[in-house]
Length: 259
Length: 259
DNA sequence: AGACGTCACTTGTCCTTACGAGTGATGACT
DNA sequence: AGTCATCACTCGTAAGGACAAGTGACGTCT
Image (cartoon, each protein chain N blue to C red):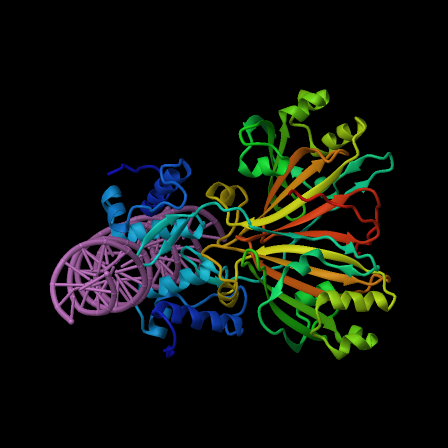
């Protein structure tokens, strides 16, 4: 029996007490927390109150609860996969994404047609409802088992201007880069990183634990005339992956800002 | 009264039904959802079941619930602030972070001493428990009101080698860069982006809504000998901010990988 | 007209009770 | 020895009741 006092609702006090016990090390990472019944006795509260407190800690990502076993302190595991976002040039002058080579395709990619949403239209500098080729891939990192959802979006306009693209919209991104550079384009990329909570289908597809956000990367490939050519989106669980960039000041490019 | 069937627990079926209604547009963004009592009648379930379903949608970030008013469909607002992560060179050859200039300091920075954790040690290539100067800042973007937590970490070793640093560990990052370059260092940066759920104090400090992850940026400034000099951390709510990078293939730097 | 109290509505908190379902160990039976 | 039923433990789901607390509108009183 531990006394609790202070602020707010009962279940928040209980949650705060448990949280403190975890952060202070009283409950070590990966160790088993007291059961709901024990917590009821310890804090002299009812089961709903205990469950409410536990739910709060779950939402914070502090603990994992397993049916029939108990609650475990989540080990603050660091990401096991660093997605290196740089472009390197191979000996024959072609571009490859280093991170792209890491992944293995878990299934056949599915290609389809769609239209720009507000977001994708923004990245591709297109109005809404513009026609697009799309290709979805489920990727796996063989070493760590990390899964990721990849999507390639190519505007009809761009695909028509580059016949080899239109023939096979589902080809791998590295192939797309090769095609684009062979056609004489000099490329540069802009990349945006966002984070948000997963939708239910993303949760299951990426096999995410509770309270795990996803990193959502949007990479736009630009041609020499700065026109957006293709948009790639990568979604990956933030518990397993991080994104790394390298910034140098040697060579400076100027950037036009939209007025 | 709407029938529900299919998979899993009752509250999940209710949650799925509401989710579908939201995504299909039946409940428009920012509109008021039926009250708990109405949902009880609509799906013929008890109040705990309704509340459980609502809690699930809340954790997904799909709705916002306001005490005494009701549940509202969260508008999928795009981030209002893009943190541009590039280094530009001013006319007098000094380096500034463009993003750094955007922010306003909401309070006095607090400087203190600490030691490396597993994470900070990793970034600074130091063992654990090494001594550091630290400086915390609470930043605000005046245009959007977005708040961010900034931390500067400087190893004792580095500060001792650069006297002007040790004199004022709380000086602004741009000043630190100026100092370092004046001392003849040629700098480059590596930056890592992670996402995770906020701790309670981060939730309140950054004024985050429910189910909102934070973006955690770790920027390491390296000297010409590739030695890590300082570590900056920026934490910002992922509902308001995104991070943008630009990648060019003009000039390629090689990177040593740790064996 | 203005101020303010009341009331009906909302969600928040907390309790009790009951049963379903996953897990692992124990022990009896083959 | 091996197999499998049982049991005690865990968390999951569902219902019911009661009261607290925030919100806004309505109506009364000044």
